[in-house]
Length: 240
Image (cartoon, rainbow, N blue to C red):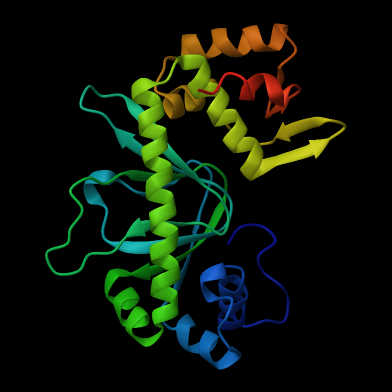
């Protein structure tokens, strides 16, 4: 379990329910319902850099991130890797199969930080959704939002200029994980220049060149372990 998850004096089942309560899908459930839902859920922990599943071996099911950070990675036909999405605490990833409804394209998931996740197998989720339809509706809304977000990433990679793509990424990261301080936005995420290149469909060399230029212009500041956005408006001006 990720550091800080456990509390003394609680049973494993109590701890599982504490984790479930952190996920908005289950926020409207009563205590008895939470205990029932917990029977369908497994708690899984992953260390930094550990793979949750590989694209070619992935099985259907739903993952809900409680703590940490997860990268969803897609391999292209020419052997490149694209990070199609970063998963933040409270967010959902994975997929469900029903009858002949089987996704043609999948992805690899890797923990970018020590991560605690809740996992519901395909069969258990279908049983859970039949019993608690509101959960299925919320998941569908989340999945739709994530799908549209992924479309935007792919559209940007296909048509946007490199500076626009990197600016859009930094602004999205600032919105989801940024810490505002003294007029700056600090993004404390374990992202390398390689990661940023993979998330924007460009090369590491181009990523370094663009970010170095912005640093000289006073738009951003980069230090080991974090990125500071000093001039948010300048990045927004780059968006089409």
